[in-house]
Length: 424
Ligand SMILES: [Zn+2]
Image 1: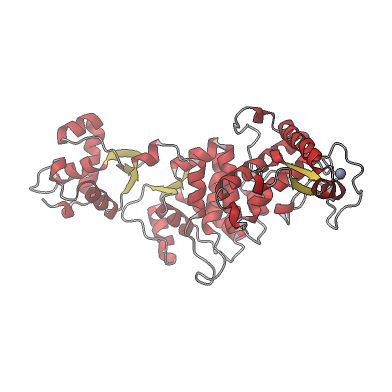
Image 2 (image 1 turned 135 degrees about the vertical axis):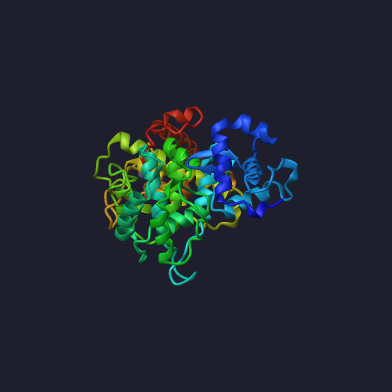
């Protein structure tokens, strides 16, 4: 047996035979089961990786095809060999299952990126910018993959305009880094895909190989069809990577920014609220309310069990529930018996409102807009310290619930992300 002698030409020979005779016949001929875990990807088509290696062995001079039982290292050996020859091997599960929102968010949150000044500085934006661009393309239903020239051109422009931490026009770097983290696909190249470290040789590799590339299939599908997932992924990218930066020009350029709702405080998105004096389109308000509720619910889920520590590592998401309530209030105290809200505003022109948890979190209440209410300082004081506070709590419980359902009537049923949530 001479597995190590197998080269690309033998593999491609076996692939050609597979194409010629069809999968069923190919597997029967060489005595293999259908691959359960790994598939070889060649030019957008998929092949049973171990069977291909077995057949490729028979194309070596003076050698015979190998049966499944003859491989010393089994499946992992075949995968290693094919990857070593520069082929792309994918998990079958990656192709067939639909990746969930939570998993994709986690992968974005754990994405390994380079940092400014070694590991000491802020995270560099190469991969986040590339992912946001791809999410925008998925949202619009544009093709998942693009020829290298188009990818290079688009990313070069985005990186030069939005590389706020000094990122250079090096599209090859994020594309290769995302490829190695499983979030990006490359097709049509030959040889080993270089690791995403080093400099201009990566650019030369891409220029020579002209890979067709794009967001990995399952991630693309999720971003295309699931508004909630898209919102969470964009939020995760923005929260983690754009801290202290203005991401809005980038979001606008990649088509992930909705002007109709988030126009109020572009410099401080965490505090963006409707101004008391400004009429907000009711549909836009409902859409923004739903967005903030989705973020708040995700946050609620991810901190469950951590609550007692009393600390938050995630101020942007924890603000989401509060923002939702302020949006919902339209700048008015939500106490139906309010004796008069001060008509002054803050220095930033925002209404004087405080957001109250109707039920104490410590007593089992939720950090969720359906159990929160916007109150003017007077009503808030009465609710907190007044003698009628227990009575008020009952009233406010009902107000919070009703106001929540007013904007999200489908909440009466189980939440289905509505078609309104199109753009984060
Ligand atoms: Zn009031």
